[in-house]
Image (cartoon, rainbow, N blue to C red; front, side, top):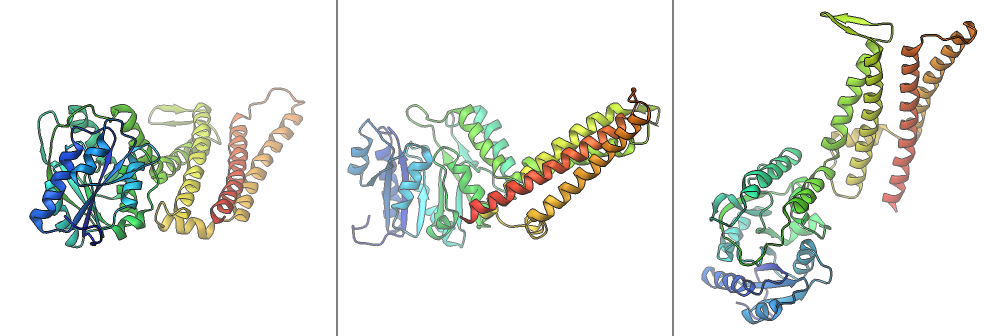
Length: 383
Protein backbone atom coordinates (compact mmCIF):
# COMPACT_ATOMS: atom_id res chain seq x y z
CA UNK A 1 0.00 0.00 0.00
CA UNK A 2 1.11 3.57 -0.57
CA UNK A 3 -0.08 6.93 0.61
CA UNK A 4 -1.90 9.38 -1.60
CA UNK A 5 1.19 11.50 -2.04
CA UNK A 6 3.66 8.64 -2.54
CA UNK A 7 4.91 7.81 -6.02
CA UNK A 8 3.93 4.21 -6.87
CA UNK A 9 6.27 1.86 -8.69
CA UNK A 10 3.44 -0.20 -10.18
CA UNK A 11 -0.15 0.52 -11.14
CA UNK A 12 -2.57 -2.34 -11.65
CA UNK A 13 -5.45 -1.29 -13.93
CA UNK A 14 -8.67 -3.31 -13.86
CA UNK A 15 -11.59 -2.60 -16.22
CA UNK A 16 -14.92 -3.28 -14.60
CA UNK A 17 -18.48 -3.75 -15.82
CA UNK A 18 -20.77 -5.40 -13.27
CA UNK A 19 -18.12 -7.54 -11.55
CA UNK A 20 -19.42 -7.19 -7.98
CA UNK A 21 -18.69 -10.86 -7.25
CA UNK A 22 -14.98 -10.64 -8.06
CA UNK A 23 -13.62 -7.11 -8.34
CA UNK A 24 -13.02 -6.80 -4.59
CA UNK A 25 -10.99 -10.04 -4.52
CA UNK A 26 -8.91 -8.85 -7.47
CA UNK A 27 -8.08 -5.56 -5.78
CA UNK A 28 -7.18 -7.31 -2.53
CA UNK A 29 -4.94 -9.85 -4.27
CA UNK A 30 -3.07 -7.08 -6.07
CA UNK A 31 -2.56 -5.11 -2.86
CA UNK A 32 -1.39 -8.22 -0.98
CA UNK A 33 1.10 -8.94 -3.77
CA UNK A 34 2.55 -5.46 -3.31
CA UNK A 35 2.98 -6.02 0.41
CA UNK A 36 4.51 -9.48 -0.04
CA UNK A 37 7.03 -8.30 -2.62
CA UNK A 38 7.81 -4.90 -1.16
CA UNK A 39 6.48 -3.01 -4.18
CA UNK A 40 4.94 0.42 -3.86
CA UNK A 41 1.78 -0.02 -5.86
CA UNK A 42 -1.72 1.20 -6.52
CA UNK A 43 -4.82 -0.35 -8.04
CA UNK A 44 -6.98 1.65 -10.43
CA UNK A 45 -10.43 0.29 -11.25
CA UNK A 46 -11.81 1.79 -14.45
CA UNK A 47 -15.56 1.40 -14.19
CA UNK A 48 -17.46 1.15 -17.45
CA UNK A 49 -20.96 1.90 -16.15
CA UNK A 50 -21.57 -0.85 -13.58
CA UNK A 51 -25.02 -1.04 -12.04
CA UNK A 52 -24.42 -3.78 -9.47
CA UNK A 53 -22.40 -1.87 -6.88
CA UNK A 54 -19.00 -2.83 -8.27
CA UNK A 55 -17.73 0.72 -7.78
CA UNK A 56 -18.35 0.74 -4.03
CA UNK A 57 -16.85 -2.72 -3.58
CA UNK A 58 -13.70 -1.76 -5.47
CA UNK A 59 -13.24 1.46 -3.53
CA UNK A 60 -13.82 -0.30 -0.21
CA UNK A 61 -11.19 -2.91 -1.12
CA UNK A 62 -8.62 -0.14 -1.58
CA UNK A 63 -8.75 0.74 -5.28
CA UNK A 64 -8.75 4.21 -6.79
CA UNK A 65 -11.90 4.46 -8.89
CA UNK A 66 -12.12 6.19 -12.28
CA UNK A 67 -15.13 6.34 -14.57
CA UNK A 68 -14.75 5.49 -18.26
CA UNK A 69 -17.32 7.72 -19.95
CA UNK A 70 -17.44 5.68 -23.15
CA UNK A 71 -18.51 2.04 -23.07
CA UNK A 72 -16.17 -0.66 -24.31
CA UNK A 73 -13.32 -2.90 -23.16
CA UNK A 74 -10.74 -0.70 -24.84
CA UNK A 75 -12.31 2.49 -23.49
CA UNK A 76 -12.08 1.23 -19.93
CA UNK A 77 -8.35 0.62 -20.37
CA UNK A 78 -7.75 3.91 -22.16
CA UNK A 79 -9.29 5.82 -19.25
CA UNK A 80 -7.74 3.66 -16.54
CA UNK A 81 -4.19 3.67 -17.91
CA UNK A 82 -4.38 7.43 -18.47
CA UNK A 83 -4.96 7.75 -14.71
CA UNK A 84 -2.10 5.42 -13.72
CA UNK A 85 0.72 7.17 -11.84
CA UNK A 86 3.43 4.49 -11.92
CA UNK A 87 6.18 3.93 -14.54
CA UNK A 88 5.18 0.24 -14.76
CA UNK A 89 1.57 -0.70 -15.50
CA UNK A 90 -0.10 -4.09 -15.16
CA UNK A 91 -3.46 -4.66 -16.82
CA UNK A 92 -5.76 -7.56 -15.97
CA UNK A 93 -9.42 -8.49 -16.01
CA UNK A 94 -11.47 -7.94 -12.88
CA UNK A 95 -13.28 -11.30 -13.12
CA UNK A 96 -10.62 -13.12 -11.05
CA UNK A 97 -9.54 -15.35 -13.95
CA UNK A 98 -5.98 -14.06 -13.58
CA UNK A 99 -4.23 -14.33 -10.23
CA UNK A 100 -3.14 -10.79 -9.35
CA UNK A 101 -0.70 -12.41 -6.94
CA UNK A 102 1.42 -13.01 -10.08
CA UNK A 103 1.91 -9.26 -10.52
CA UNK A 104 5.47 -9.17 -9.04
CA UNK A 105 6.63 -11.84 -11.52
CA UNK A 106 5.52 -9.74 -14.49
CA UNK A 107 7.04 -6.61 -12.97
CA UNK A 108 10.36 -8.41 -12.39
CA UNK A 109 10.43 -9.40 -16.07
CA UNK A 110 9.80 -5.79 -17.13
CA UNK A 111 12.69 -4.72 -14.92
CA UNK A 112 14.94 -7.11 -16.79
CA UNK A 113 14.65 -4.71 -19.72
CA UNK A 114 11.51 -5.83 -21.56
CA UNK A 115 9.00 -3.24 -22.74
CA UNK A 116 6.01 -5.59 -22.47
CA UNK A 117 5.41 -8.89 -20.69
CA UNK A 118 2.46 -11.15 -21.52
CA UNK A 119 0.95 -13.54 -19.00
CA UNK A 120 0.69 -16.68 -21.13
CA UNK A 121 -2.18 -18.99 -20.30
CA UNK A 122 -1.26 -21.47 -23.01
CA UNK A 123 2.28 -21.91 -21.67
CA UNK A 124 0.96 -22.03 -18.13
CA UNK A 125 -1.99 -23.91 -16.70
CA UNK A 126 -5.64 -23.59 -17.69
CA UNK A 127 -7.96 -24.99 -15.03
CA UNK A 128 -11.05 -27.00 -16.05
CA UNK A 129 -13.89 -24.73 -17.11
CA UNK A 130 -11.68 -21.64 -17.40
CA UNK A 131 -11.54 -21.48 -21.19
CA UNK A 132 -14.02 -22.97 -23.69
CA UNK A 133 -12.62 -25.73 -25.91
CA UNK A 134 -13.26 -23.63 -29.03
CA UNK A 135 -11.23 -20.73 -27.64
CA UNK A 136 -8.39 -22.86 -26.33
CA UNK A 137 -7.78 -25.15 -29.29
CA UNK A 138 -9.15 -23.18 -32.25
CA UNK A 139 -9.72 -19.45 -31.82
CA UNK A 140 -6.76 -18.43 -29.70
CA UNK A 141 -4.13 -20.56 -31.51
CA UNK A 142 -5.37 -19.46 -34.95
CA UNK A 143 -5.50 -15.76 -34.11
CA UNK A 144 -2.16 -15.90 -32.28
CA UNK A 145 -0.57 -17.82 -35.15
CA UNK A 146 -1.89 -15.33 -37.68
CA UNK A 147 -0.62 -12.42 -35.63
CA UNK A 148 2.82 -14.05 -35.33
CA UNK A 149 2.90 -14.66 -39.08
CA UNK A 150 1.79 -11.20 -40.12
CA UNK A 151 3.81 -9.18 -37.63
CA UNK A 152 6.90 -11.26 -36.98
CA UNK A 153 6.24 -12.25 -33.36
CA UNK A 154 6.81 -15.51 -31.50
CA UNK A 155 4.29 -15.40 -28.68
CA UNK A 156 2.05 -18.20 -27.50
CA UNK A 157 -0.93 -16.23 -26.17
CA UNK A 158 -1.39 -12.93 -27.99
CA UNK A 159 -4.86 -12.38 -26.55
CA UNK A 160 -4.10 -12.77 -22.88
CA UNK A 161 -5.87 -10.21 -20.73
CA UNK A 162 -2.97 -9.79 -18.27
CA UNK A 163 0.05 -7.78 -19.40
CA UNK A 164 2.73 -5.58 -17.90
CA UNK A 165 4.49 -2.74 -19.70
CA UNK A 166 6.31 0.48 -19.08
CA UNK A 167 4.57 3.81 -19.30
CA UNK A 168 7.15 4.92 -21.85
CA UNK A 169 6.41 1.94 -24.10
CA UNK A 170 2.65 2.41 -23.75
CA UNK A 171 2.83 6.08 -24.70
CA UNK A 172 4.70 5.14 -27.88
CA UNK A 173 1.79 2.95 -28.99
CA UNK A 174 -0.91 5.69 -29.10
CA UNK A 175 -3.70 3.11 -28.86
CA UNK A 176 -7.15 4.11 -30.15
CA UNK A 177 -9.62 1.23 -30.38
CA UNK A 178 -12.41 1.12 -27.82
CA UNK A 179 -13.69 -2.46 -28.15
CA UNK A 180 -12.36 -5.97 -27.65
CA UNK A 181 -9.85 -5.50 -30.47
CA UNK A 182 -7.88 -3.24 -28.08
CA UNK A 183 -5.89 -6.32 -27.04
CA UNK A 184 -4.94 -7.01 -30.66
CA UNK A 185 -4.12 -3.36 -31.33
CA UNK A 186 -1.74 -3.29 -28.39
CA UNK A 187 0.29 -6.32 -29.44
CA UNK A 188 0.24 -5.44 -33.17
CA UNK A 189 1.41 -1.89 -32.53
CA UNK A 190 4.02 -3.15 -30.06
CA UNK A 191 5.38 -5.48 -32.74
CA UNK A 192 5.50 -2.71 -35.33
CA UNK A 193 7.20 -0.41 -32.83
CA UNK A 194 9.76 -3.20 -32.25
CA UNK A 195 9.20 -3.33 -28.52
CA UNK A 196 10.97 -6.06 -26.57
CA UNK A 197 8.25 -8.56 -25.63
CA UNK A 198 8.50 -11.51 -23.22
CA UNK A 199 6.06 -14.03 -21.73
CA UNK A 200 5.51 -15.42 -18.24
CA UNK A 201 3.41 -18.60 -17.82
CA UNK A 202 0.44 -18.18 -15.47
CA UNK A 203 -2.54 -20.15 -14.23
CA UNK A 204 -5.92 -19.27 -15.69
CA UNK A 205 -8.99 -19.74 -13.48
CA UNK A 206 -12.72 -20.12 -14.19
CA UNK A 207 -14.58 -16.85 -13.94
CA UNK A 208 -17.55 -16.14 -11.70
CA UNK A 209 -20.69 -14.96 -13.46
CA UNK A 210 -21.49 -14.53 -17.14
CA UNK A 211 -18.69 -13.86 -19.61
CA UNK A 212 -19.04 -10.70 -21.68
CA UNK A 213 -17.04 -12.20 -24.54
CA UNK A 214 -19.02 -13.08 -27.65
CA UNK A 215 -17.12 -15.87 -29.40
CA UNK A 216 -18.00 -15.15 -33.02
CA UNK A 217 -18.51 -11.39 -32.91
CA UNK A 218 -15.37 -10.64 -30.90
CA UNK A 219 -13.35 -13.27 -32.74
CA UNK A 220 -14.29 -11.63 -36.04
CA UNK A 221 -13.38 -8.19 -34.67
CA UNK A 222 -9.91 -9.46 -33.73
CA UNK A 223 -9.44 -11.16 -37.12
CA UNK A 224 -10.68 -8.12 -39.00
CA UNK A 225 -8.31 -5.86 -37.10
CA UNK A 226 -5.29 -8.10 -37.75
CA UNK A 227 -6.02 -8.19 -41.49
CA UNK A 228 -6.66 -4.47 -41.81
CA UNK A 229 -3.39 -3.69 -40.04
CA UNK A 230 -1.52 -5.83 -42.60
CA UNK A 231 -2.31 -4.48 -46.09
CA UNK A 232 0.71 -6.34 -47.47
CA UNK A 233 -0.84 -9.71 -46.67
CA UNK A 234 -4.44 -8.65 -47.29
CA UNK A 235 -4.02 -6.73 -50.56
CA UNK A 236 -0.50 -6.41 -51.95
CA UNK A 237 0.70 -10.03 -52.11
CA UNK A 238 -2.62 -11.50 -53.37
CA UNK A 239 -2.94 -8.62 -55.83
CA UNK A 240 0.57 -9.12 -57.18
CA UNK A 241 -0.05 -12.85 -57.58
CA UNK A 242 -3.31 -12.24 -59.46
CA UNK A 243 -1.65 -9.71 -61.78
CA UNK A 244 1.09 -12.22 -62.68
CA UNK A 245 -1.34 -15.10 -63.14
CA UNK A 246 -3.65 -12.86 -65.17
CA UNK A 247 -1.07 -11.55 -67.60
CA UNK A 248 0.50 -14.96 -68.29
CA UNK A 249 -2.38 -16.23 -70.48
CA UNK A 250 -2.96 -12.75 -71.94
CA UNK A 251 0.60 -12.66 -73.28
CA UNK A 252 0.99 -16.37 -74.07
CA UNK A 253 -2.27 -16.62 -76.04
CA UNK A 254 -2.19 -13.23 -77.74
CA UNK A 255 -0.99 -14.69 -81.04
CA UNK A 256 -3.15 -17.82 -81.00
CA UNK A 257 -4.09 -20.98 -79.10
CA UNK A 258 -1.47 -23.24 -77.51
CA UNK A 259 -1.24 -26.95 -76.80
CA UNK A 260 0.94 -27.91 -73.83
CA UNK A 261 1.37 -31.58 -72.90
CA UNK A 262 -1.91 -32.44 -74.60
CA UNK A 263 -3.85 -29.59 -72.96
CA UNK A 264 -5.46 -27.09 -75.31
CA UNK A 265 -5.48 -23.42 -74.27
CA UNK A 266 -7.52 -20.85 -76.18
CA UNK A 267 -9.02 -17.39 -75.68
CA UNK A 268 -11.23 -18.59 -72.81
CA UNK A 269 -8.14 -18.46 -70.58
CA UNK A 270 -7.47 -14.93 -71.79
CA UNK A 271 -10.89 -13.88 -70.49
CA UNK A 272 -10.07 -15.33 -67.08
CA UNK A 273 -6.62 -13.76 -67.26
CA UNK A 274 -8.06 -10.33 -67.99
CA UNK A 275 -10.39 -10.54 -64.99
CA UNK A 276 -7.53 -11.71 -62.72
CA UNK A 277 -5.18 -8.99 -63.96
CA UNK A 278 -7.73 -6.24 -63.34
CA UNK A 279 -8.82 -7.55 -59.93
CA UNK A 280 -5.21 -8.06 -58.92
CA UNK A 281 -4.19 -4.56 -59.96
CA UNK A 282 -7.07 -3.11 -57.97
CA UNK A 283 -6.05 -5.09 -54.88
CA UNK A 284 -2.40 -4.14 -55.33
CA UNK A 285 -3.21 -0.44 -55.61
CA UNK A 286 -5.51 -0.58 -52.58
CA UNK A 287 -2.75 -2.26 -50.59
CA UNK A 288 -0.17 0.38 -51.51
CA UNK A 289 -2.62 3.12 -50.60
CA UNK A 290 -3.51 1.42 -47.33
CA UNK A 291 0.09 0.86 -46.33
CA UNK A 292 1.02 4.46 -47.15
CA UNK A 293 -1.89 5.65 -45.03
CA UNK A 294 -0.93 3.47 -42.05
CA UNK A 295 2.69 4.63 -42.20
CA UNK A 296 1.62 8.28 -42.41
CA UNK A 297 -0.69 7.79 -39.43
CA UNK A 298 2.04 6.12 -37.42
CA UNK A 299 0.16 2.79 -37.42
CA UNK A 300 2.84 0.90 -39.34
CA UNK A 301 6.60 1.15 -39.60
CA UNK A 302 8.41 2.12 -42.75
CA UNK A 303 9.98 -0.69 -44.76
CA UNK A 304 11.74 -1.20 -48.08
CA UNK A 305 8.47 -1.46 -50.00
CA UNK A 306 6.98 1.77 -48.72
CA UNK A 307 10.28 3.63 -49.03
CA UNK A 308 10.56 2.61 -52.68
CA UNK A 309 6.93 3.36 -53.37
CA UNK A 310 6.95 6.81 -51.82
CA UNK A 311 10.27 7.78 -53.42
CA UNK A 312 9.43 6.58 -56.94
CA UNK A 313 5.65 6.88 -57.28
CA UNK A 314 4.33 10.42 -57.61
CA UNK A 315 1.02 11.73 -58.91
CA UNK A 316 2.63 12.80 -62.15
CA UNK A 317 4.38 9.47 -62.73
CA UNK A 318 1.22 7.55 -61.90
CA UNK A 319 -0.80 9.64 -64.33
CA UNK A 320 1.87 9.25 -67.01
CA UNK A 321 2.07 5.44 -66.66
CA UNK A 322 -1.71 5.16 -66.58
CA UNK A 323 -2.09 7.40 -69.60
CA UNK A 324 0.51 5.39 -71.50
CA UNK A 325 -1.37 2.14 -70.87
CA UNK A 326 -4.65 3.77 -71.91
CA UNK A 327 -3.08 5.07 -75.12
CA UNK A 328 -1.64 1.65 -75.96
CA UNK A 329 -5.00 0.03 -75.26
CA UNK A 330 -6.86 2.59 -77.35
CA UNK A 331 -4.26 2.15 -80.11
CA UNK A 332 -4.97 -1.58 -80.23
CA UNK A 333 -8.67 -0.79 -80.20
CA UNK A 334 -8.27 1.61 -83.11
CA UNK A 335 -6.34 -1.05 -84.99
CA UNK A 336 -9.29 -3.42 -84.49
CA UNK A 337 -11.70 -0.77 -85.79
CA UNK A 338 -9.56 -0.30 -88.92
CA UNK A 339 -9.52 -4.03 -89.57
CA UNK A 340 -13.28 -4.08 -89.05
CA UNK A 341 -13.66 -1.24 -91.57
CA UNK A 342 -11.51 -3.13 -94.09
CA UNK A 343 -14.01 -5.99 -93.83
CA UNK A 344 -16.94 -3.62 -94.42
CA UNK A 345 -17.89 -3.83 -90.74
CA UNK A 346 -18.74 -7.49 -91.02
CA UNK A 347 -18.10 -9.94 -88.20
CA UNK A 348 -14.39 -10.36 -87.47
CA UNK A 349 -12.49 -12.46 -84.93
CA UNK A 350 -10.29 -10.00 -83.03
CA UNK A 351 -11.20 -11.18 -79.52
CA UNK A 352 -7.56 -11.67 -78.46
CA UNK A 353 -6.59 -8.13 -79.44
CA UNK A 354 -9.79 -6.84 -77.88
CA UNK A 355 -9.02 -8.45 -74.54
CA UNK A 356 -5.53 -6.94 -74.56
CA UNK A 357 -6.96 -3.51 -75.41
CA UNK A 358 -9.60 -3.78 -72.70
CA UNK A 359 -7.15 -4.92 -70.01
CA UNK A 360 -4.57 -2.25 -70.83
CA UNK A 361 -7.12 0.56 -71.01
CA UNK A 362 -8.88 -0.34 -67.76
CA UNK A 363 -5.54 -0.93 -65.98
CA UNK A 364 -4.32 2.48 -67.05
CA UNK A 365 -7.53 4.11 -65.88
CA UNK A 366 -7.23 2.36 -62.51
CA UNK A 367 -3.67 3.58 -62.08
CA UNK A 368 -4.60 7.18 -62.90
CA UNK A 369 -7.55 7.27 -60.52
CA UNK A 370 -5.52 5.53 -57.80
CA UNK A 371 -2.71 8.06 -58.21
CA UNK A 372 -5.21 10.89 -57.76
CA UNK A 373 -6.75 9.22 -54.71
CA UNK A 374 -3.35 8.63 -53.12
CA UNK A 375 -2.50 12.30 -53.58
CA UNK A 376 -5.82 13.24 -51.99
CA UNK A 377 -5.03 10.89 -49.12
CA UNK A 378 -1.64 12.51 -48.71
CA UNK A 379 -3.28 15.94 -48.43
CA UNK A 380 -5.59 14.66 -45.69
CA UNK A 381 -2.72 13.07 -43.80
CA UNK A 382 -0.62 16.24 -43.97
CA UNK A 383 -3.55 18.28 -42.69
